[in-house]
Image (tube, rainbow, N blue to C red; front, top):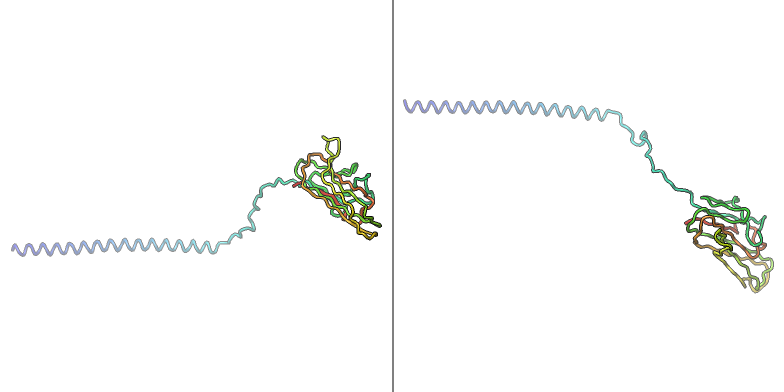
Length: 222
């Protein structure tokens, strides 16, 4: 009876283990099914969201967006001028007169052409590139002939003009006398003061070519 009692307890224990295992298996299966169901719902939700995104009308980037606001540029016009010799009015003694409105001539950035003295007047102190070009024509050119080409400035703080650039040419005619032409170009970066008036002198204005654009004068702030 003692042996039979122990055997019965062992058998009951085995049955208990089996039923416990079955119970755990059922619980695990139920949890797994629940997880699968939740995952399926999530996948279906993602699919619907994707379909909605695909079917939704797309916004065209760049067409309906407001333009980007650019930083306001405070870029004033650079002081500059380019004038052409006015051969009809010639010169005031040796100072050449200019036309600020013909062809590509212009004044801008506060630079003005003064009719009364034929000067380009600047309204800002600074470094300027100043240039002048003249062309001379000779009906009869002698080897001893010479001419001067001068760029100078009148300044309120000075009683006399201040020479900025000067060309002095002599002996440039060929040995054979006859018609001849030559030119002179002056150009340099120079410091100017506010209200300076820049002018051009030529020793013989009557010899200048009347061809358009051959005689000019200008400056611009660097």
